[in-house]
Amino acid sequence: MRPSILVLPLLALTACSPTVQTAAPESAAAAAPVTAPILTGADAVDTSSYARPAEARVTHVALDLAADFAAKRLSGTATLDIDAVADAKEIVLDAKGLDIRAVTDDRGRALPFALGAADDARGAPLTVQLQGARRIRIAYASAPGAEALQWLAPAQTAGKVHPFLFSQGQAILNRSWIPTQDSPGIRQTWEARIVVPEPLKAVMSGERLTPDGEPAGAGRRAFRFRMDKPVAPYLIAIAVGDIAFQPLGPRTGVYAEPATLPAAAAELVDTEKMVATAEGLYGPYRWGRYDMIVLPPAFPYGGMENPTLTFLTPTFIAGDRSLNGLVAHELAHSWSGNLVTNAVWADSWLNEGFTSYFENRIMEALYGPRRAAQEAWLSWADMEASLKELGPDAPGTRLHDDSGADSGGIVYDKGATFLRTLERTVGRERFDAYLTSYFDRHAFQPMTSARFLADLRANLIRGDADLERRLLLDQWVYQPGLPANAARPDASVFAPVDQAVAAFNAGGAAAAVPYAGWTTAERLRFLNALPRQLPQPRLAELDAAFKLSDSGNAETLFAWLQLALANRYEPAVPAAERFLLGMGRRKFVSPLFETLMGQGDWGQPIARRLYAKARPMYHAVTTSAVDKVVK
Ligand code: BES
Ligand code: ZN
Image (tube, rainbow, N blue to C red; front, side, top):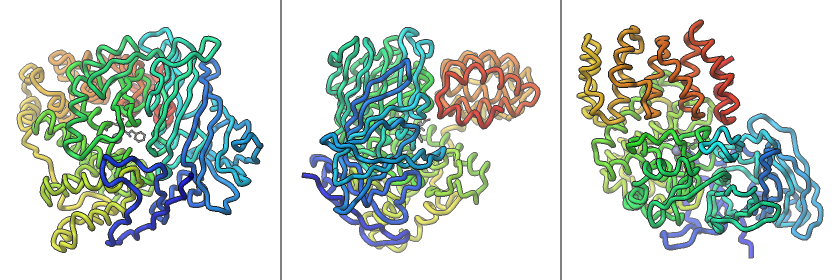
């Protein structure tokens, strides 16, 4: 039996009415709904998707695909289960560069289909005439340049022997390898059978049913996966390569290439504790296992919260676990993002701001208030810098941002600050109880800013007019800049570092700075607080005293290179070259090229030379950013 579409009424932007209860589980013990609701109304219209889910929507995706490394294609079939109104004639899917070979119903009868005009961002609508079908099968192949996929040559891996493939779906890239409704408000369950050449292994962001695979003929093996909880389709992810696994705890473990696995596992030893800590804060982890895969260095992000299988950059491996806030962040998305999901990308703060706040709470619970306060302060400083750069009235500084402007990620820090402000205003105990109940009430459902505010008013504020007045909720969510009630993190945590900066600025020796004894956050604070213009001898002194160009910590190396390259400090160029050719994380790559391009006759030739070498190694996410910088 197929459940019918559940449609939730939209709450007006300023509505104070209680949220509508849905078929969502009351508690973690309850199973996830098979079909998740779709929101209707202006604030839930996804302008990044061609889908018209109120007419016909995908509820389940079954993939049967083979990976062809020579052709750089995934090809096979996607079988979609569809929920549609009785008189629905057609379903509209998202497709980007897909080679669609045939569409049939479940008895093999051909169904008419058409690919509409494509645009660069969204790709094309794929419209299928249903002719009464409620299950359709699409035979297709992804294009060799599919934006979600990166096909790595052996030279781009740690082992150097086998090729590697990984996907990155967020935000709207999965339509380049899966023909479905690629919209975060249209949750879908899924299953997959993936055929790969031996001896490679495939892993995906769902239950891994055949860890060692099954014979699939002609030197190939098949791997099967299942996600029985409805997820936003950007969370379907795959990696294929020479992948080994090491357990970390009863429900945690790490995948990586064999050469990377020992260092990865050492860096991740606290993961099992992290999951328990997160549960202690905001309720049960509802996804079964929490595993991670440490990818080759071309992975364009720090991390990606693919359910049951977080994808991680190897650049978080510092040797001392000082960058494992990244793991806390991706784990936190198991609640904010994967369980309760932004219905539209204009509300990505509901994913990223909540998660940044949650991340810091995990760090505090696990490592203590000092480390958490230091990291919160760095985030606050980033936010202030972005506000200054963009200007306090810039539309891109709003949490609910439908301007399409590049906000430089301010929703992370401003969103976290908003939640910290709520916490400080109502008290931690009360706010934590509210957040736990919020995740429970909206588990496996889409969320919008308006619905969140309505939920907050119904379940936290409860008509307390004085509290409502003090919180400035609408200003926080819909206005640019920073509201006056913003909760500042404790700045005293960096007082000793700021004193060291002052002493150095007054002419003190670099050797007098107690850098070696500092935490990574303190080192970052120090490097980023130094004047942006420094004479060459002072840079040389810093480099020699703290071995900055040889740093094995990607964050401190990045902070140093930003300073050094902005001052045309030639001795740092080889380190910049090693770094930029050794990994493809956009957050590091793009600003470093920008800095070089800002250095005229000195920096621009270096940037062009390095980019010519590095570009073929980078993911499309990174090249599309750097192409705009290096011309
Ligand atoms: N979900 C994001 C990554 C993302 C965001 C991909 C938007 C595509 C579009 C992930 O959780 C994230 O925020 N990663 C950060 C690390 C985090 C510690 C701030 C990153 O990749 O740097
Ligand atoms: Zn995130």
